[in-house]
Image (cartoon, rainbow, N blue to C red; front, top):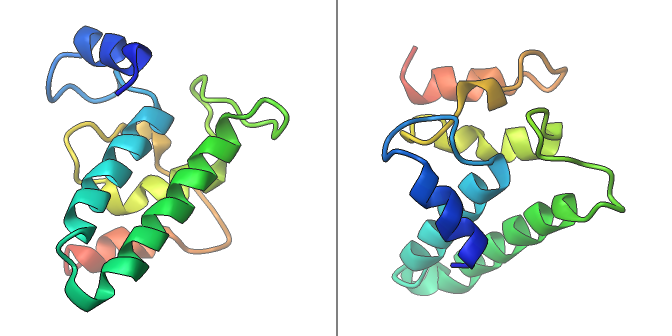
Length: 114
């Protein structure tokens, strides 16, 4: 973890949403997924490749040339990438896409069996 990440985590009370940036949130979830992927048996390489691809997307969106900012209005790509983790205690509901033509909101309702 970088010193900047540790500083953000030190300022954020454990379990309090909204105190961590979306990019830091995503990178932490990807790191968790990489740890799990190591035990994915014959699917290990694919699981690690998916983590690598997600990490590249996050880093691409951190590049100022790309044009995305993480200042309270993150890009829709990162918001969608975070949706599978919406039940995590650090997930900030303001990241949830309000309306898209992709009908991404049905995923969360489907997971809860609604």
